[in-house]
Amino acid sequence: MEEARDARDNYWQPGPSRHHRLRWPWATAPTPTAASQSGAPPEGYLGPQRVYGYEVRQTLTPEEQEFFRSNPRNAGMAADDGRIILNPYIKRTPQEMQSVAQNEAARLYMREKGYAPTFALTPEQQAMPHFATGEYAKPENAAERNASIVGRLVAGDPSAGVPTPEQQQWASRIRTEIQQRGQSPSTTPQGETAK
Image 1: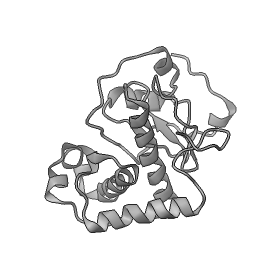
Image 2 (image 1 turned 120 degrees about the horizontal axis):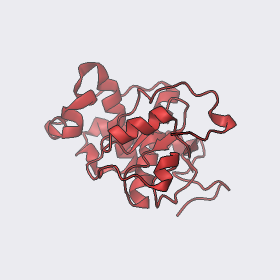
Image 3 (image 1 turned 45 degrees about the horizontal axis):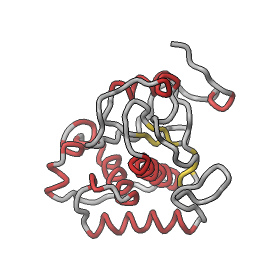
Image 4 (image 1 turned 30 degrees about the horizontal axis):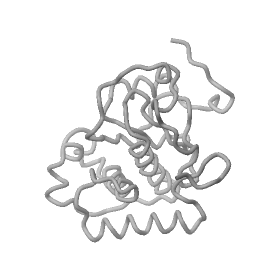
């Protein structure tokens, strides 16, 4: 499959991001569409081009496409290039995709600031499949798991589980800092707040 690339992607380092491996319970099996073949955002995603000031990249590298094809429950990623990428192989509502993009933007912000939230998980969170199995279950990935929980809370995603007061404090801090730097949750390319 030939990949159309523009000048913005020439500096891209190969391979999917090692950072976020988000698992969303409502993901469906991959359904290739014309948009997904080109690496475009999911069909029906009419959301903003920027979320909390971070660009939603419209094209994927071949490695990212393969990662998303192989991981249909992974809705999005805070890419290593500092942009948000969304899985084009799954069907979601625009509201769900906006939540995914907000989560990824919060993760990019934490990465940019060097924040590594540390806190314990509740028994409910420890039992949740997306935290109990896979990459997030490994002790060496606790910082990624905790950043995922904070990002989910910032986005209002219930898959974070019932948060502890410490987790809520982290989410409130991140949300406040992003807003203080003058970034609304979502903006269109013209800078208008998305509805």
